[in-house]
Amino acid sequence: MVTWRSALELADLVRRKEVKPLEILDAVLARLEAVNPTINAFCLVAVDAARAAAREAEIAVMKGEPLGPLHGVPVSIKDILPTRGLTTTGGSRLFEDFVPDHDALAVGRLKAAGTVLFGKTNTSEFSYKALTDNPLFGVTRNPWDPALTPGGSSGGAAAAVASGVGPVALGTDGGGSIRIPAAFCGVYGFKPSFGRVPDRAAFGGFERVGHVGPITRTVRDAAAVLDVIAGGDDRDRGSLPREGGSYLEACDADVKGLNVAWAPDLGYAAVDPRVLAVCENAAGAFEALDCHVEVVNPGWESPEEFFTTMIAAQFYAAWSDRLPDAEPLMDPSLVRFIRRGGAVSARDYLRAVAGVEEYWAEVQTFLERFDVLLMPTAAVLPFAADALPPREIAGQEVSVLGWMPFTYPFNMTGQPAASVPAGWTDDGLPVGLQIVGRRRADGTVLAASAAFEAASPWRDRRPGL
Image (cartoon, rainbow, N blue to C red; front, side, top):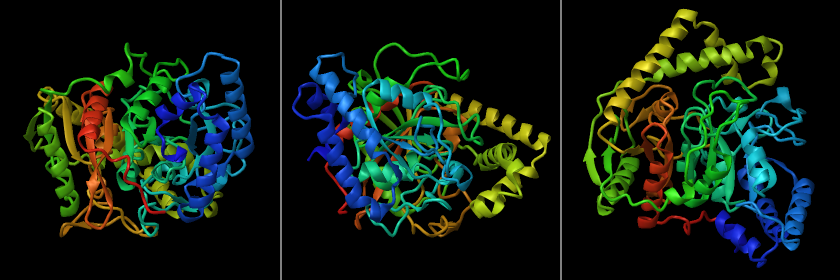
């Protein structure tokens, strides 16, 4: 079926004139119509604009014009990223009618590569939490079990890709928002190095930690997307210049001899035994790939206090002027979080920032010995879509972020990190393994991900929607 083809396969079929972009789009839209009433992954479907773009893509093929690397491939965009001429709400009633006059930098690059933008995916309000629900569009559900959450905040993106509604979704990640839903939905999510993909962050709150990246069903699709969207832009002065070589080619690099650290709990996290069992097996696969795998306890302390202090203050700076007038329109938990930020003094904030720098020094020193670091992506399995995250794991009481202890630390450090489908539990729920690389070593993370995918393929396992 066309809807389950990879982005690279679709681009090749278009290039060889074996399928038309409009035929691909119609198949994806039909799939969306079939599954979205159940999972609520999309908050906007741009049928007319997408069909116009698909027709233009077909004309370019017929005229023999130069084609982009993803020509004719349907993509969806998380509703936190601006899209010119299409409503961009950030999941908030405050922006219910906001239509940007520009595209996010990554969106513009995807369009230039020939993709066909067909919809916007659901998020939490301003992406502030790692779940996917908001007062404007409601709750997004997990395609493996609609009673469960897909995680977030790029939950709509991951649920769409897992359901066969497009091979590529563009998401954002300020504390795990690409990797957690990728893990919960059994797909691949890649958070590039900080600054690798330029981002002007239309909605404030995640300064210093925000990343833009792809969610896909294959590693090579994510690499192909990164080849398109990566590279510096002076409109984002923190963006990194383009590297030499191709991320797609990096997927073919030999991983034999890589020094791999397996840290089952980072020394401080409680982990569901079912998650741990699947991830331990996945980590063991790297030994079969002739990597040097070592079980480690880095001895780090949880950086949760630094992270939450910093982000709460940033959300207060971004949104407190809207209160109290807008309070009835907003997610009540977001309002509480913003007010919490109001209690953070300048001294508290600067101490949190200093704590982040100290944490980075520990991580950097540790990774001088290892090429990649492995751990579970999330400490728990997907939980009920309408429930709060668990506060007890494996018989231990945990903090507010105790269910996601492995993702936000690497937003603080800015390192590249991916979630690969590690396997499924006996009752059919996906589990993610996180692969973290050294600073700016995006190619190494992609190579390790691709090697694992080849050893433990997952793309043919699909939810029963």
